[in-house]
Length: 517
Image (cartoon, rainbow, N blue to C red; front, side, top):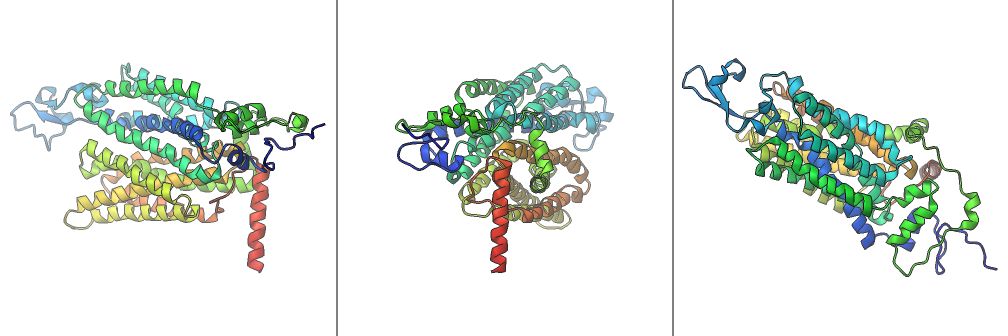
C-alpha cells in the first residue's frame, strides 16, 4: 500500500519543499512565461491608475484670456479678471476646455477650485480604509482589483455628464474610492505568483504601468487641446472598462492568498495552470483533517493584527511615516511646476519621463542594494534637492529657473525611486495574511501627503519655505526612520504571523551571537 503523501505539493523526483516560495520555484520555476503574462496583465492597471490621478492637471486648469476692448482699463498681464466687465475680456480658447471656464469659476475661492482634486484624494483615503483589507480577507486580490477598476471606469464615464462643480467633485470622490486599491492589489497579486529571485523585478512592472499612464496623459491632453475636457474623461474611461473584462476572465487569483484562506484545491489548480505540462502535483487529501481552520473573514482582522503585534506595529508605523514624506514630494512637485512658468504639457511630460530612469534604476539595483540603504539614500538626496530649490529662490543666479527645474526633476526622481523601493520593502516585511493591508496602509500615508501638498504649494507661492523647504525636510528626516527596520533582501516571503515572528527571533539571536563573539 502506498505511503501517505506528506507535503502540500509533491512530485516523484524531489524532496518535499519547506515553504510556498520553494514550492513555486521547484514545481513551476521562479519565473516563466505564464507568470510573465499574468504579471504584465495585472501591472497594466497602473496605466489607468496614473491617468485618473493626474487628469485634473488638464481638466481643472485656469485657461488664459485676452482683452476684447481697446480701453486702457484692461491689460492682459496686470488686470484682475474678476473686476473687469464680462464684455471686456474673453478666453483664448473655448470655455469648454476646462471646468473652471465652462462653469465660470474663475472668481471662485481656492476651496471651490480645488474641491474636485481634494475630493479625489479624500476618496483615495476612505477607499483605502474601507476596501484595502477586503483583499486580505473575503474578496482576494483578483476580485478586489476587478471591483476597483470597475468603480473607477464607471465613475469616470459618469463624470462626463457632470452638470456643475458639486456633482463633478462627488464623482471624483467616488473615482478616488475605486482607485485607492488598484495599485496595492496589482503589486501584491503580481509578486505572489513568482519566486523570490524575480519578486523585485516583477514588482517594478507595476511601476512601469503607472509611468506609461502618466506619460500617455499629456499626449492625450495635447491631442485634445481646444476641445471639451469631457472628451478626455471618455478617452480614459473606455479602455478601463475593456481592462475590467480582461481581469475578470484572464487573471488568476493569488495561490498564496488561497492557501492562507484554506482553499488549497484552488491554489493547486492555479499552480498547475502556470506549471509545465510534465510536472505532476497532488494535494494530500490524507492530511485534510489536519488543515487549520480558516481565519476570520472580518475585513478589519488584518489591520487589527498589525496593531496588536508590537513588531508589526513598529514596522507599519515606520513605512507609513516614510511614505508620508515621499507623498508630499511625489504629489507636490508636479503641482508646484506651475510656479516655474513652464508649459503644462511639457512639464507633465518631463515629470512622467522621470519615472522611467527611476524604474530602471530600481529594476537593476533591487537585487544588489540593501533595502534600507537604498531607501535612506533616495529620501536624503530628494530632500537635499528640494531644499536647494528654495535656496535658489533667494539667490541671484543666472538661469536659476533652469536650475530649479533640474533640481525639481531630481527631487521627483528620488521620490519615485524611494516609493518603488519602499513598496518592494513592504512586501518583504509582512507575511501573506496581512501583506495587502500593510501595503495599503503605506499607500494611504502616501496619499495623505498628496492631500496636504496642494495646500503647501499654494502657501509656497509667497514663500518657498512652505513648499520646497518643507518638502525637503519631511522626506529627508522621515526617511531616516528606516534605520530601525530589518534588512529583507534575498529573504523568503512568510505566509503567517507566527512564521514571521520565528524568523525575526532567529535573526535577532544570530545578531546577538555575532556581537558576543
